[in-house]
Image (cartoon, rainbow, N blue to C red; front, side, top):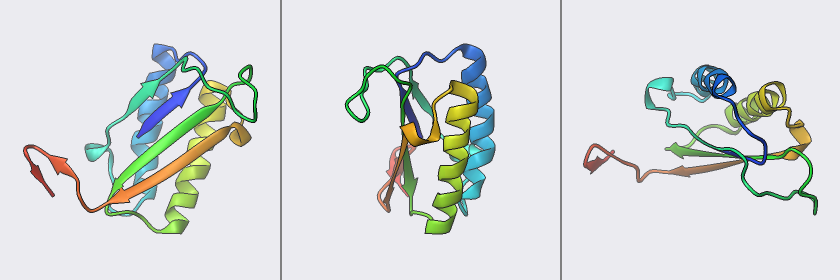
Length: 111
């Protein structure tokens, strides 16, 4: 899961996000923290609705095999709530993208 935002992220905020995302990923069937990889890209130059002076975030969720729409809806709600409570980014300033694939490599081979 990749988090890009134009706000700074302190080490305390990052730890809060890591712990919360480790729990939140279980909203998707068959997904768990043991396979969750996170990247944070704070202070990224971003604009939303033509403005670059408001806090925004783009969250990319790449999935092996996919997930049901209802589960993605729940995860999106959780991600937007975390963006707001931890980083101060309003939910209507967050985009969440889901990409699913059956081709995923790890440890020198594909699943």
